[in-house]
Length: 412
Image (cartoon, rainbow, N blue to C red; front, side, top):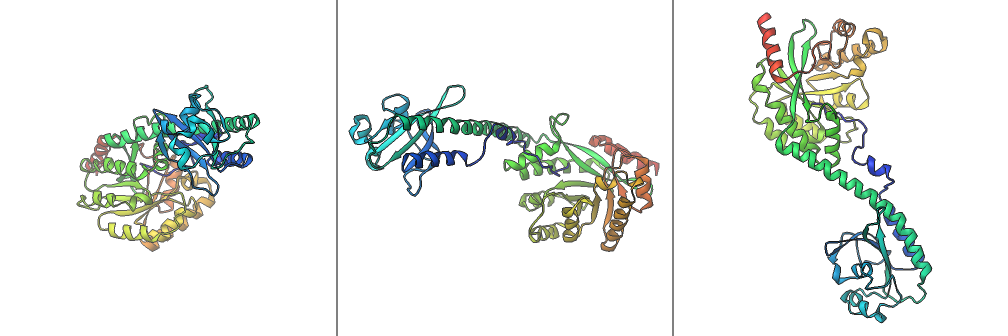
């Protein structure tokens, strides 16, 4: 289970490609409001007998705000769409259909100009409106044309936002289904002692229903963006820990968690059920953590139940900062450091330094991503404690991992 996240934006990419930029609709509304000398400008969604104010610019007034909902028959929007009210109302008190509305009196509404807000397929989304509390006899057809021009620009933004929301809803549904069903399975990556090749533990790697098409990192990144990151990680942790009874008691299990998940009370509750320190929490994070103190306090409390590992050592600032602040039991060398180490003096020098540092603080070193015999032999010479990678063993089902460990035990 690897929750190390690349710099992706799968949720918002489609909307950005369509031109969506947060805040642009509000800027458009401000421009049209100031151009017409009105007090309020807004874009509404009209559907199912309701009017929802989706975007609003009110200047210094507080006559209306985004998110307000009211019955369509109580206001102007539906009547403009039904052509019961004209696009231009210079003085609402002089238009009988407008004058009888309560909002005309309570706002009050003097001048009003509104047009249908249409999407690219011609369908009506709602209305694009401006109004003031005082009458304005100067409003004319040129102002309606101005409204149409601004409304067309706003509609492209609104439609792009709709595409984003639709995508978000689909992602929420997909991730929620996985969480509710607990349908994350685990593959086990053996971790081998380099001195003799013995399997000493396994890293749990998450496998989602579509793992052949979409990597786990995409699932965790999407979940994080929609606020379900910790919940999805906890689901993966539960799935990983369910494998413990099937693995020999002398083998440990590494489970990756982000700092956010470490801080979640639910993780401690899950780990309370463990009876022995066979689990290693591998703290993964590519972003800089500004305040390590809460993380250090929680990990201190968890150390009686689990051991702590950090990954990405040698890959950058965050990995080294993790080591200094968290004082892990295991340090995992990033595969960018392991790759081609047998032919790169700089990588050898960096690994030599990390091995010595690990000895000084009482940590073990585990190299990730070992893909060749040359890398394996170089790491052995450098006294790295353990390694994992395709050269040693590929990820495998839990049953196969248990059998591998048993077979090695018999051979020994």
